Image (cartoon, rainbow, N blue to C red; front, side, top):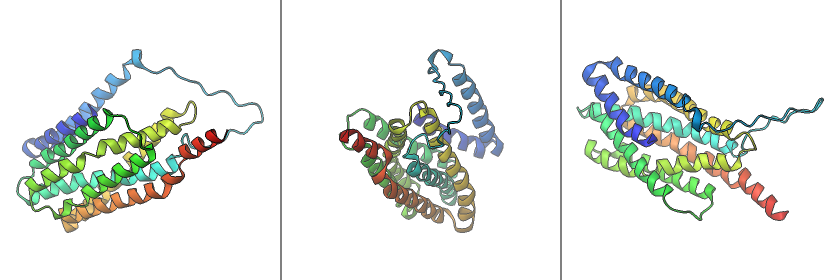
Length: 258
């Protein structure tokens, strides 16, 4: 359902912004976000039970540690990943405009999300034996490799085909990232760990959009796609540098030794 939003949303918002008026897309997105948030907040019957944190003993110092040790690697990785996605969005709008079909940008971005949806369904419908850390690194690497081809696309048709294939590994990458936090989270701090990942993505999207806008305005869509590949390369570098020593593996080793 999350991917369905990203399939339909870009197409609708782009059409509203280009064919109605620029503010129409933003207003529609804001209204949908507000209504959806209120509807989600009203789902009291499915709300997980709260687990209060035990009070610390008098004089005891409470350890200030991350909710999940893997966040040392995941947080910066997801920041760069968010910047990559934001840069792709802006570059695709500019690419479509340069080819005289700006309203098609939303459809192309929807194709990207459709590929992600297909990949997510396939990934989630089968058991996996490979370690979660390896799956995250592999799917992230494939995602970045796909993005690295965008800048050489000759036209919109070629970009739409390639962007669908490149999107197949997006959901598996995000699933693996959240699964790592879920597996490693300390007791009672799983929600906090998930919030770290979501916040890191938001920071990356905001910073990436601001930077990418200037690059695309100055050099065009192809420079924007090159920047997106650069963000992806930084995300992959953070992943490869940190995951081999992730907290889940250390905990598993300690448990086996016991």
